[in-house]
Image (cartoon, rainbow, N blue to C red; front, side, top):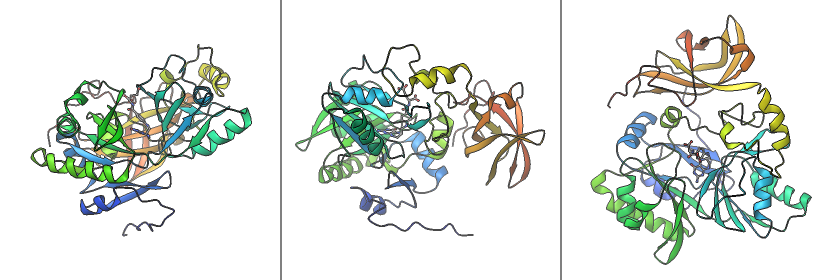
Length: 376
Ligand code: THG
């Protein structure tokens, strides 16, 4: 059956780069924060190999910013996240799970501390501006909240540093992981961070002016010709291999950071004024679920979402992809901890029938699995 297409309207917001993506052959979109996010150019597998070997420019404008400005900015960010930000320095990025008063996840943005009283939360797909406005109103906080028209443009891949240095200057090489600098490009101030939703290395440029952003896009492609630069996007295969979790897919409003293996981003022992911290201290003693990796031998088109052990449902498959590098089918499954305890494999129904899936950690430990990376 043909895949249905997506009706694009003003509600499914276009980005500053949508026309460029059409020129570069985008073949599939998803909607993320009510905005278009490309998912495929040539094919998921061709895009994957290119990302792992060369350099890509990604329109990730849909990672919208919630801007929090004012005397109570840090207080509001701390209310939303159980990660201690008391000692956060200006110029740093922080992976920040956001949780409600029950300790359930609401989003997992990258937070950027721009100044003592100025934060951006670079969102995954859920409406955090509304939540932030509700909290600010309810707690009577002195903050200004908005979604500024700021669009991250990611440059990812092993050649990303060389390309970015060619276009934005050699100084970008000195930016360390999860730190950012302000760079002037054609008279516009842009935040440039060493970050991005792949483990292939690279930068994210937070574009504050659409025309300047398109000029930057064009220059990246002009100067990147010799590097075989291509338009790309977050890649399903690469991000599963790398253990980067997708909010709304691998984790949702019913899961806690402990269910998802995000323990290290919860400051259980810190004396912080965070909405979720009390609930999370309780949950930490006995988390109910665990996100695990599944490894299957054959390339599959389809996997049903139930994971079983002895005909009993023990978990739910949330994402999966064939890894061409490791020649295994990889999946992420949210499981009931008690029901998988002591087990090392389960069964899933697939397009090729009932198949065994062995359990692994997230991120996958390919060395422990005895798997060597194959070249293209
Ligand atoms: N960049 C920006 N915004 C984003 C994403 C991004 N918003 C949505 C989504 N991605 C948020 N989720 C993640 C998940 C993981 C990481 C970044 C954003 C990430 N994690 C590193 C890791 O797992 O090694 C480092 C985290 C740390 O230890 O601080 O990069 O990609 N702008």
